[in-house]
Image 1: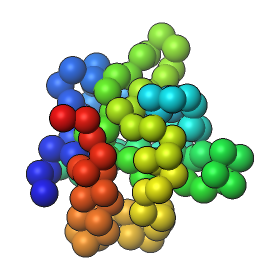
Image 2 (image 1 turned 60 degrees about the vertical axis):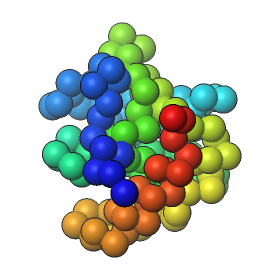
Image 3 (image 1 turned 180 degrees about the vertical axis):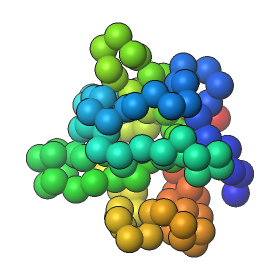
Image 4 (image 1 turned 30 degrees about the vertical axis):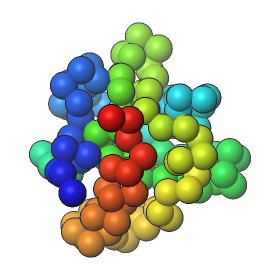
Length: 117
């Protein structure tokens, strides 16, 4: 698996250090929630998205590599995934999402298989 899934695409328009908390998150087929937490760590960048009522208040971990664009003006993050792809992702584990390589491998592997080529 490539580490690139855990880094922002150069064309996404994200500048390291920009606070994305509270930004809306849009999948290719509609809104999925808001950014609750994020990290710009090299080879470990991610978003934690609060899906609200969409999938019963769940949080999902999205590797930064699935972000296609960040629109600062509208405070919106766009991802190259459908709602169903996000809904089917491995369950977010707040205790494992930082520092657990196995968990990152599981989540990253899922999203690597669903990214557009």
